[in-house]
Image (tube, rainbow over all chains, first blue to last red; front, side, top):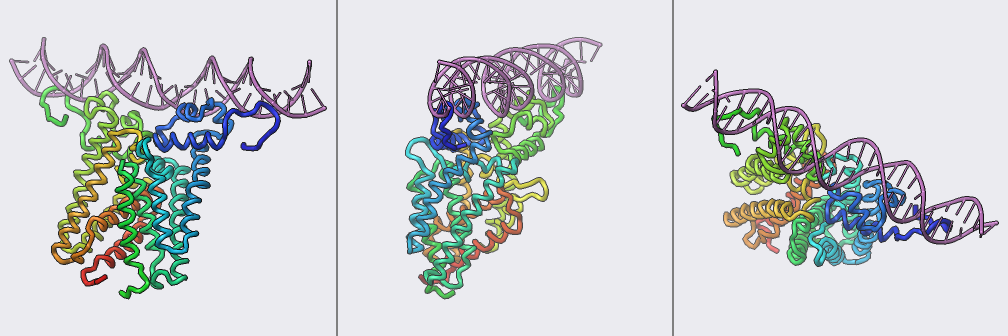
Length: 209
Length: 209
DNA sequence: CAGTTTTTGTACTACATCGCATAAAATAGG
DNA sequence: CCTATTTTATGCGATGTAGTACAAAAACTG
C-alpha cells in the first residue's frame, strides 16, 4: 500500500496527508454523514484511487485514526509517562487533550474516535470494536501511570488505581462530548482542572480515611 | 399534531408508540445511518404519514427524545430529588442510568441523546444545540441537588458543587460511551459505584483539608 | 524507443434516499 | 346517501452514494 514502488506512474497524493484530510472530514461530519465523495474532494483523490489506496470507507477511517493514534495519542501518552510528577503529568495530559479537542476556528471537533463513531457503534460490530479498543487503551494508560505513582509513594498506598483511572477516563470522555457540543477551551480547561484537583484530594498520600 | 380530530379517517398509529419505535431505530443505528425508510418500517407508517405527523427527520428525532425526556429522564430526576439521602439518591440515579443504557438482548444502546448525535453535532447546529441542551440539563440537575445537600449539611460546606456536579456528569457521559462500546451491566455498575464512592470520600462533611 | 507498470480520470450500473403529488380509503356530519 | 375531512397507500422524479470497468497518462526498464 505505502510501498514506494519505483515503477509506474508516480502517485500525485501523499498518503499521510490524504489520511489527515480524510480524518478531518470524519471529525467534522461524523462517520455515517461522510460520503466517499466528501473524502474524494477533501483528499483530492478520485474515488478509484481512494479504493486502491486504502479500501472502503471503514478501512479509510481505520487507517486514518491509526495514523492519528501514532501521532497525537502517542504524544499524549509519552507526555504522561515522561513527566516524573503524576500531578503535573496529568495536568499536561489534559491540557493537551483540551487543545486537541477544540480547534481555533473550524467549529467544535471533539475526539476523532470517541466523538465520531459513538452513533454507529451499536449497529456496526467493527466500529464497536474500534471504540472499545480506544476505551481500553485509555483505561490501561491511566491505570499503568497510577500504578507507577503508587509504587513510588506519590499517592496513597491503598488507592484503588482502577477506580481513579476510571474517573480520569470519564473526564476525558466528558471533555470529548462537551467539546462536541461547542463548549469552549476555557470552560473545558476549568472542568479539567477542577476535576483533577478533586481527584488528587482523594488520593493524596497523607490522607488517612 | 396530536389533536383528536373526530372527523376524517382515524389514524391507525399511536403517536407515542410511533415515536418510541423511531427512537429505537435512532438508538440502534445512530442518527445519520437511520433513514426515513427505516423509520417508516419501524413505525409501520408510510413516509407521507411520517411527514404529516412529525415533519422531517430532525423533527422526528427531536420529538422522540422529547418524549423520552418526559418519561425516563424525568423519572431519573424525580428519583434524585425525592430521595432524602444524597448518597442513596445518586446511587439509585446511576443504577437506573445503567439499566437504561444497557438492554437485555438488542445489543448495546447507550444514551438516546449523548450516544446517538455526538457524531453529527459538529456539522449540524440544530443537533449541536440539542446536545448542548441535554448536557446543560444534566449539569444543572446535579448542581441543584448538591446545593440542597450542602445547605442541609449533608456534605462539606466548602464543597465546590459545580466541580462535583461536573464529575457526576462525566460519570454519566462515560457510562453512555462505555455502554455504546458494549460494556456490560455489571461492569458499568462497578464503575459507577466505585466512582461514587470516591466522590463521596471527597465531599464528606467531617473531612477537614 | 517499445514494453511494462502503476496511477489517474471518466463513465457507468445499481441502488438508497428524500420529499412530494395524487388517488384511494375510512370516518363524521348533514 | 352524499359531501367534507382526514389519513393511508402507491408511486414518481431528482439526487446522493457505493463500487467498479476501462482507457488514457506518466513514470521506469531494458
